[in-house]
Figure 1 (tube, rainbow, N blue to C red):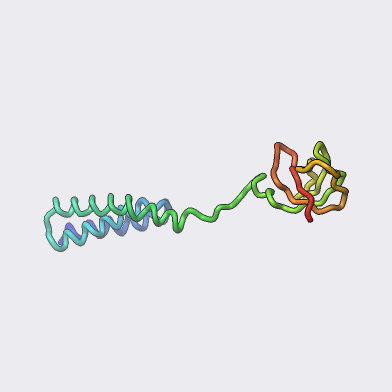
Figure 2 (cartoon, rainbow, N blue to C red):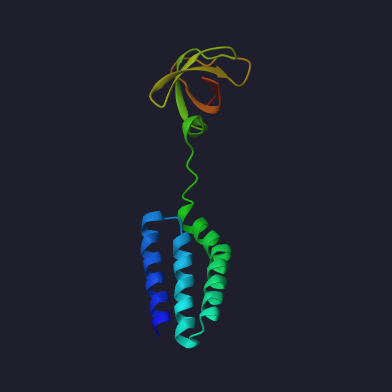
Length: 143
């Protein structure tokens, strides 16, 4: 029974240590140690206990951990930097054509150019950012 107690304590300590790491690795190994504790309580054979621990740990690391990481640790796909500005609305500050202009975008004044040739976009017009090219917002007039 002492083998089962050692496996149980090791499993609990590994699961508690997982709280510090947050990577789900120690949780899987700790669960494997709990399986080893169960095996030790049933069989008392240390070779079988180690085999059960190894198989359970490797199996959980290979099968359970990736699914849990996708589900709980992946987080939402948050767009940052210039990717977050694509599709945003802006107001034309100075006339925008295919070569130059300025828009107020996300509280800042950006250099801008129109995506379509033809009539320039007048100041005060609402536009949508189609892409960011360097430090220039490529915009399209709202309909």
